[in-house]
Length: 328
Image (tube, rainbow, N blue to C red; front, top):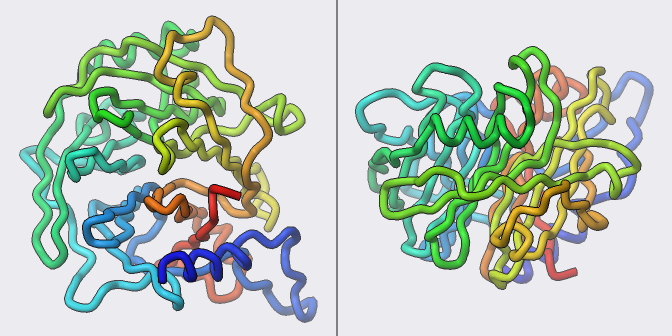
């Protein structure tokens, strides 16, 4: 059934051109399928094979959104509610990454883009349908993480937007989307910081790997928006995204790349690694990537409030999603 759903969604999820409005006064439909949330700018996703759920986080609240993939799209399963994570002592703000560990637990990461401790947290939790979700803190060597990124970029400010683990769950990869002197001067990058993971503790970084989209995208530097181990476990899937200065239908875009596992798990090359041709191009801003064991991917899009107004039926409480077949 899942394979049939993937095929149906994949056949219509990535049209090649923007749909034209029916008349000058009409707005076009959104470029991908719509799914409902709350204070919704979906920023991270993961698939739970034990339950078949697609779990989603938003960077505007602490809710764990849970969905079932059906022929009608991503829908709230019967008997469940979108409820906030039960946080340990201290708040957590601006979730940007989510991944599943081999144990079945999940790791969530915040943006690390502000000095407030609430924005510099990694949490671990398990999920059971209909049950409260208790999150516990994962210790991170924040000073070492910051120093490693500064040494690689020469800049003090950064923003994390993705998290992944290797096949063993003993190495965690943080994806950095942008760097700068301050948050007011962001520069898009594709940067991966690798650390050892043991239980509820992340060690100091042992490598920082720089990747580049410029060669594959005609000079455009997009920023990393998620990364996940692929279904085979021999490569990583990397999402990148771009937000243009103008609020136009073409102002949001992104791409999906595949990177051999050895590039991110081996010795860090001295120069940025050129990404190959993208697997997919997107016409919205992709932010979260859930990998289904079959090889299918669920991509969720974190589009800005103003951009949503350009499309008919794209409400502020909605997100967009696409299901694609990564094997093609």
